Length: 168
Image (tube, rainbow, N blue to C red; front, side, top):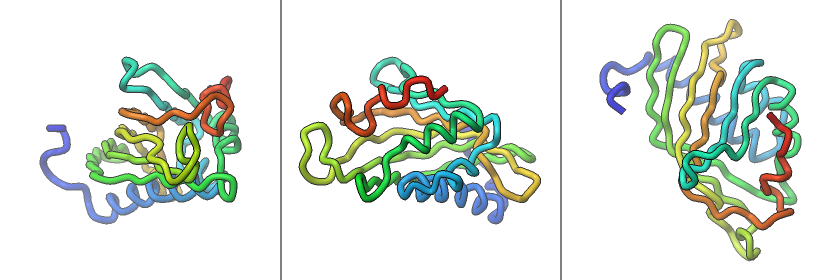
């Protein structure tokens, strides 16, 4: 955390970085596959790990084709309504590269493994590396999603890890 203490990035740069983070969540939650994919560089790594199990990998998705396949398989309305909420964002910019850490919370309309009402599916921390691209956008070159607690669904349900085998 100490690396985030000190001078702040320019306002416009911070807004551009946060805008990509917001686009990521909106696109993921409403099935905007191309928009979500465009939040990443072509060689980006998207890694989801389980902090309660020694940071075992849940998903490792790297490169444009596997990122596209991952988001194509992700559930969307009207079958599932989900929200990825990101907060407490810390950003450090050094030239054309930024690092950030933030908290996230994922809620959905499935009610967890037992069905029912709204469900807090999981929460944790994002650790990001982003780069300034030639079109003026900031994109993830690496997004590590550390899942600190989760209400994992039963086998065969929409976020079952088996649904994403071979994605990276």
